[in-house]
View 1 (spheres, rainbow, N blue to C red):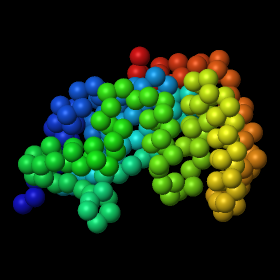
View 2: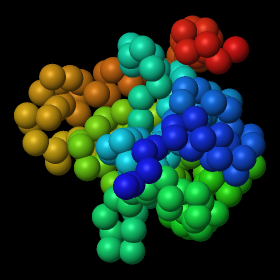
View 3: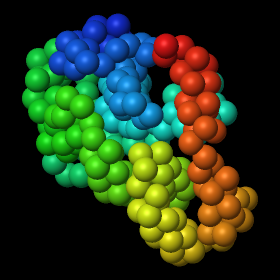
Length: 207
């Protein structure tokens, strides 16, 4: 009989490999990098297998959701390029190997402190399978917040070109490239970004 997942043990074991992260919820650990969170979520596929997801979350934008969502997500893949999953036995016997595979696929995890350039390089490398504008917004705002205003302007132009190539059915609800630009420029105020970050830290109980 295949052993059921022990979610508390999975969470604790991963924290032992990532001691600079902290438990957000069972099967979800996070680390704050100034205005961004990085996280590892261990998603149950069944009562017997789970998969590993690395993600970011921009504290400067309130997506009005009750828990930390998986933005700019990367799932640990197997050698065939499919999302990998693990049983409790595989977890107990091979966790160090699993962690090393994650390091290979998500090199930013090897850094003790993520630099702005690390975050942006990671986000730009994400395959935007679901035509999600959130990552494009995050790249602009991170540059702006850190004083790279000229680069933020360049990223707006790049983002508009990317969104213009997407199907209208996935962009119509926010007005396409022009609507996205208006939305992003409305957020480009350091006082607003700082206030939103503080509000989110309180809402997510991360103080």
